[in-house]
Image (cartoon, rainbow, N blue to C red; front, side, top):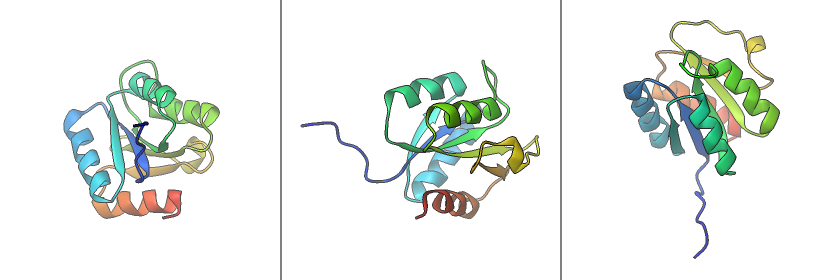
Length: 125
């Protein structure tokens, strides 16, 4: 058998706080998407380099490591232009001009309805 790719859109969730990441995974999977987890931007880049099926990167802005969520968003846009970007934060207010073209900002705390709406809007589903 070959590699089986998910028929559901794949969302890479980048969140350093475990409980928030688990909550985001639960909401995104309940909305009908496949969720993959990364604890920081470096882990996210490794995953993006190894998988070609990621549709959306859903990233926290404030994270430890070599880059924050805004730098990650710019890196994703530069290397993987088709991937959609959603940035989230409970501490930082972000203008759409702070994100790469087409990126969306979702303030924390977010609801399952908000996540579903933004993801469906971005992927046209």
